[in-house]
Length: 247
Image 1 (cartoon, rainbow, N blue to C red):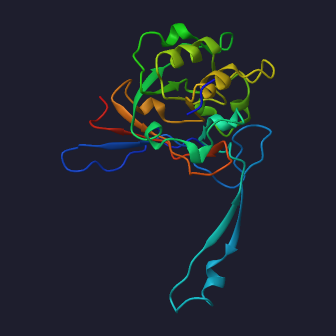
Image 2: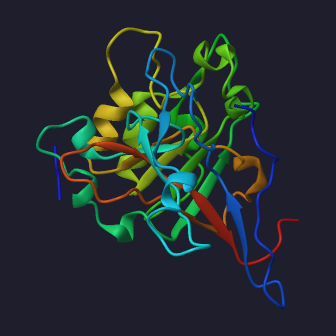
Image 3: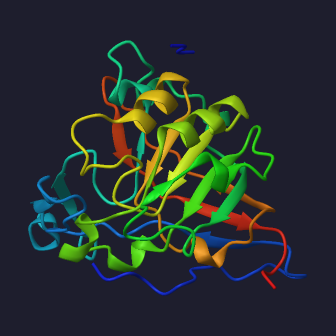
């Protein structure tokens, strides 16, 4: 092992600058109080530290602020797993190289019709026809349509161990999925995709959304968490940048 709610609208993009040079597509689920991301894990709790009303006594007339406290597990919303999540000696969030998180070439695999309830695993054969060296591999299963519902936690598609090893061998930098987990959580305690990918310093992003708004190739992907020491997972604002409109 080496170490160095309801789904939003299908497309979230900023206004393109003159000439249509760039579009930004939001790939993250919003976080709110009470959000259930993963069945069995605690939901976020948001409480005020300083309300706007109370702040008026501390500042000049007409000046007010709100300061809030959020209590949540790192596995909330759309989040990134660092190697430390799986391995005690792996890099934590503060130890990640930003170059492996920002502006990565995105290779999006359209897999909505490639899996079925009786064969939920995404295999190496399904991913073998694309060059992925240096890229963020994004697995579009369509499962995000169920996010925030009880159905999201049962029967979800996942990445098989052989597929994870293929992506490692071909030089992927990051692997993301719009499903409950990159591993099969219904087959026992083994987690081959997490173990292989994070053991090879390949980042994992789970609970993506809106991948259907991206082309198969040509976008740039970003998913950077805060630099928290001694922490393995944290929500990200994942997004993709496009140089030209999607046909």
